[in-house]
Amino acid sequence: MAVNENNLTYNKNLLEKLGFGKALHDPLEKFIIQQQPEIKLKHEASHFKDNVEYTLHFRKSDTTDMYFFNRYEATLKSNDEAFNRTQSFQIRNGNNITAQESFNLISGRAINKELFTVNGDRYEAWLKLDFSQKDKYGNNEVQQFHQNYGYDLNKALNKFPIKELEDADQKGQLMASLKKGNMQQVTIEVDGKENKMYVEANPRFRTLNVKDELGNTVKRDRVEKKDLTKTQKLDEALNKDKSQSQKQGKSKGMSVS
Image (tube, rainbow, N blue to C red; front, side):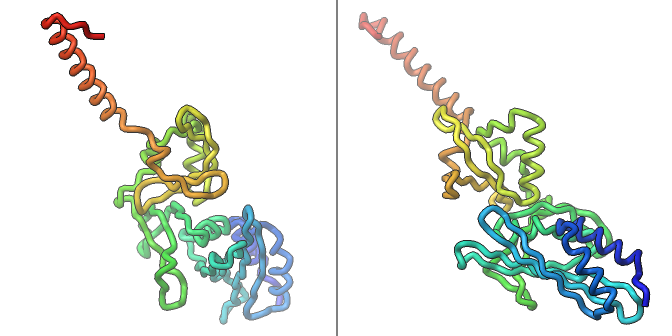
């Protein structure tokens, strides 16, 4: 039986669109030529100090010569085995998770996606895995924080003295990276000194997670901007008290410095 070239091309393009590159093109084509009813392809990728092992599942139609990419499993292999996790991701039109996004999800970070309901309605949401809850298939439950939840990434960023926010292009790149679930290096000024730190989106608490260069969590109140309004009001009150004291001191013939 001849290979369905259009179907093969579609699947190759889908692999690239999801971030698996071209390395799996030849193995996929070989198994399709052999008319294997089910195809499993293995793929590995390195992300910083961690590795991710992917298993991609294709299945031949029972009635035609077409193959369908149904799902893939992503397994995180970190230096700390306690953080090793596996999650299965279904391939659905419009709601697909890329290889990079799957790494960020199983690493515990949130991603922002444009999704579609079963009726085809479009909506935007932040997704995050809940490692304390499993579904009936043994997968970690997926938490969704819809746009009505009220997480504003721009507002969250502006709470911190991040130098990259001063440049429109850099700010745009930073926001796009955070929406993909990446942990992004930024420059934050603390006590007049610039520090290299890492930030990631935290939609649940409508803020950012901040880590130092060693990966240690930094308390947000240490690096957030101070409430300038409160500070200004306090200064005004202190200056008013000082002015009144000076007037009283002068009326009594006292010397006030």
